[in-house]
Amino acid sequence: MKALVAYYSESDNTKKLADALAFGLGTQAVRLEAVDVQTLSSYDLVCMGSPVQYGGPAQRVRDFIARMPTLSGKSCAAFCTMHAFGDRNTLQTLKTLLEAKGMVYLGGCSALGWSRLIANFGPRIFNRGRPNREELTRAEDLGRTLMAKMQVEQPTVAPTVQGVEGPRR
Ligand SMILES: Cc1cc2nc3c(=O)[nH]c(=O)nc-3n(C[C@H](O)[C@H](O)[C@H](O)COP(=O)(O)O)c2cc1C
Image (cartoon, rainbow, N blue to C red; front, side, top):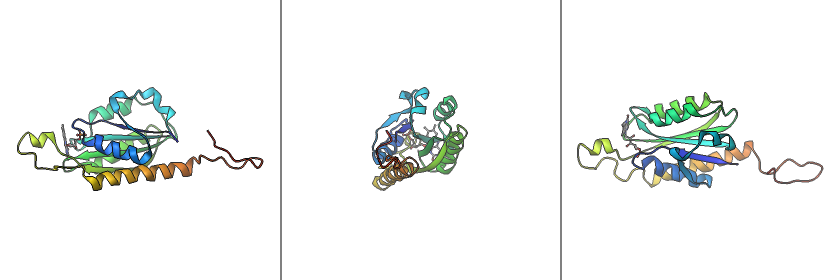
């Protein structure tokens, strides 16, 4: 099972969630800017991460998904961080955009994050230390859950053929 955790992040909040999710999946997260959309068809699972911006996914993430080829039957998941509101709409929008590419949505998660916008107007007290350990553990758990779901759909051990069991790839 080949999984990609791709994220866009301006102040590393979403990066932290991406790293935790990738850890749960046994892989490493990659910045969206480093991902070539043409390589996406080589993955079984694509996890897409974005900060909440103006109540939805960042425009860069929307643009990236718009450039993606159709990935019929491939699995996907989404994650985001926010200052206070908009995670539900962001996850729902990512789900809708990825499903429009033919992908099957398996789940998502969100966390709070320190906001550079708010910090401009006062002391950096809001959401200090977020995402916190609990939120990162939830992201790791989502990674493990996704891995388990993928393994049910794509067992690494092929069904017995003429009495021989072996890895599929
Ligand atoms: C342009 C902009 C718009 C934002 N809009 C929202 C918003 O609508 N709701 C919210 O809760 N936080 C909003 N935030 C705060 C970010 O979602 C939050 O700080 C997020 O954790 C940043 O993630 P990052 O460090 O990965 O970029 C906004 C931040 C920026 C810079």
